Length: 374
Image (cartoon, rainbow, N blue to C red; front, side, top):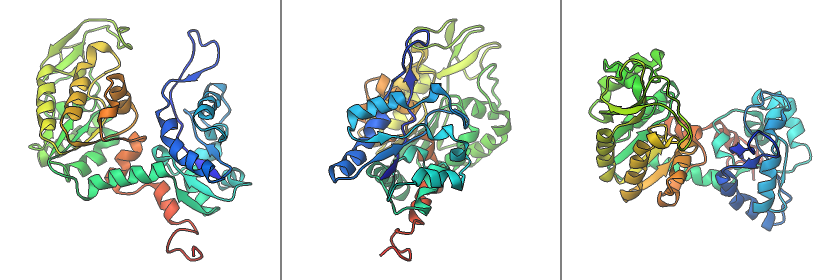
């Protein structure tokens, strides 16, 4: 049995890049063990497959799954793991010939890779056209939880959108504004909204092509869209590091960032306003940190949001990636209702209500209602 998983996990290497890499965060591997263990316990011979990083269609030892395979052997003994799917250009190119090679020798397919199911790649959409196919337990649970946010969330429903690229999230922001009582916007994407309001943000991250779209969102739903009221900025020549590794001056500023400075976190007034909005919520969806939390100097805003989410008593759903990493770094990951394994996939599901991987499973020859499925 072939199981598509999403083991695109961070790796760390010893100082100087000497010696083998190890898995830095095994959350996605652990999340898949329920499905893998269930299959093995029922006598299935299970082979998993995943992508890792961006090797751009050729073999690159830096992106070998060997460290992932070692961790998988500890968590799910007996499960094999194929080499990185993206070593072959046919994966991202959705080449039918690559699909044929991938499924050869297998008699069934399970998609448990929620975090990759928004990609129409060969290993996601191809196997259901060749083999009897099903959703894994993790994928089914992700769809159930996120679908609940679309169908009937308990109100007030508050969403927090952070991260860097506003262009990538404009669609989901529009969709969320139709469903939520309040939408909180922080992180790098907030600076494009501030420019749309007429503020100067100096060296802060801005997407000039999205300014007009942000203006439109502000005009249509400004009373439900909460933006920063103050910022923490990094001075000229400063750098963002991990822990205490950053350099340069930092200061709380208003919404107009001084020349040469860069906004990198929400300020204390903003943190208080965001926390107040979250305190009264009954349902919360959070995707994206609101500052450069990996640098201790700029972690206070994201920590304040995390603590407000976990203290609210609301049903809370957290998108994967950096948001999950932030919660984990604050020791709060076990105090939210559900942590998704897919940041981009969760956003696309909320925006469109569907994913390429889900459509492929519905169209498999053995899917309920399909001819020949009985």
